[in-house]
Amino acid sequence: MRVKVLFFGVLKDMVGTSEDTIDVPDGATLASVFTTYAERFETLGERRPSILFARNRDFAKPETRLAENDEIAFLPPVSGGSGESPGGGCFSLTRERISSKVLVNQLQRPEDGAVVVFEGVVRNNTKGRPTLFLEYECYESMALEQMKRIGDEIASQFAIGRIGIVHRLGRLQIGEVSVAVVVTAPHRKAAFESAFEAINRLKREVPIWKKEFFADGAVWVDGEWDERLLQTPVRNEVE
Image 1 (cartoon, rainbow, N blue to C red):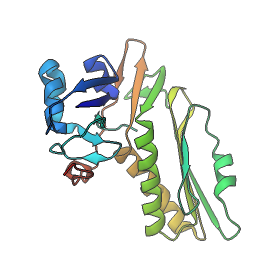
Image 2: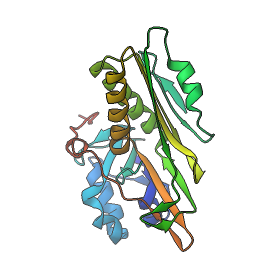
Image 3: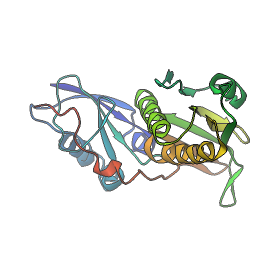
Image 4: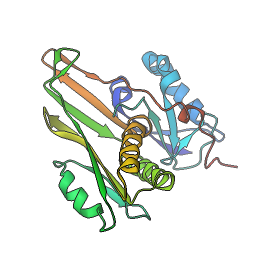
């Protein structure tokens, strides 16, 4: 049977491609496919403890068995289209400049007494090393699903009105907004707490990667998955 394999971030650089299609035997698992590539690319195998697997845009355990035409992805630790949630939230990816004002106007309701806006901005250095610009890439369909999931879970946990998250992709210059989180709520406490929770979870759970460019080279920024994802139960496993 044939499956599509996707690589992102530093893994893409290691194997020299962002996408591959291979034939695998019946009973193949995510782990066995990864092993096939790790035998060809030694540095890929060395990264295994920090890599998560996905099958058809859902996190899955290594022992998950595969089916014909599955789309699988190997995801390095995260470092940072559009859709709406049932509660009226807004979650999107864009290659255009982010306008938090537009997002606020879209989300704010007459009964909201608080609006909290968080913007992540590209700074000009990393630990004193001058930064020229950044590039962001992501597993777009999966990223949108995870952003909506985070937003819906936060909306169910806090007394807020609506929540919106927008993340920029592509090349960003110094001073540009890379991500915006907007929370509207009747009261300020829930709005502040929700915005803080949203950006923290975005950084640890959504498959978005950042590459930083300097005068003397470029590096993918090391990140860290949320510990809960490293123990993700098997989903959509073939019986």
